[in-house]
Image: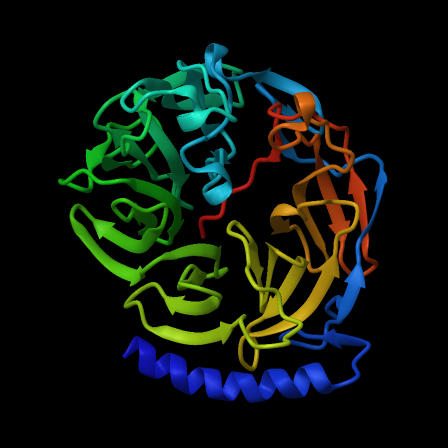
Length: 397
């Protein structure tokens, strides 16, 4: 049924996409009503300038801050990063009452040599220890929730899910497996939701349904599942990752397989709409990155061709595409803050080369706030590579 729906939808979308791309359009306005939603250019370039960022909660290395004003220190000596997931899932998420931030931390054990065979480590050698921690924004207290845990996700009601590993230690070339556990609140006792261990990574909640990845054995890929209770789950899409959750939590937009976007209903996994990104000679991007944002009819995401805005009204289609010459890897984890503005973070130009130009260069990074209607971005203070800065937002709906 998935393939049948996809084929029918793609015929219609292909015709619509060709007509759209052939049209000489300066800008497109969309919205549910006539209140004057923001108008974005069909294609544009984002310019960038240093300046003051709007208020917001952020991670700044091992510091949690509001608008660069430190609130407290995190990690108790561990790094505040999520090497098991990268940007596939958030490093930290706030609780809906604004009282806590639940986040991932990492204690490095092994000495990694990036250019050496096997990164200079033998199979089974300890690499590091992941943990899930809890920061109280009211008191400034930082507490350990569980050692050997990763990928926290907090629902709109305050329920907390994360991976509880079978072992506290991540080892070289050994799959890190565990069980998903869920607690009604960060201070409640967690319950096991998956009786069999696997390479699970919770992403976000869609109402009372937990969206989580399950790693494919001997692969870096993962399948997307919807969990509704202990050992109650359904496959939403194989070899997929979430780009964004709909505002009402009933759908996800996911990248599925190779260069296919699917709008999937969470309740039953049915494909409501789809869009192929692999048309010959197409001006569409070839890939959208995970951790985007969905507001009203629009979805914003990073891509291999800069920042893109999709629109789901009248059929999933590309509304706008923004080149990002000031940001060599685009704007990561973009989140709509209103109809026209997005916030995210970006690598900055002029990377620091490695010794003897061996290996990948290191990029400074910074928070950004962009006005898509004017095509301008404000860039915050630069952070050195591996001293990451992130806005703290929650993809759950």
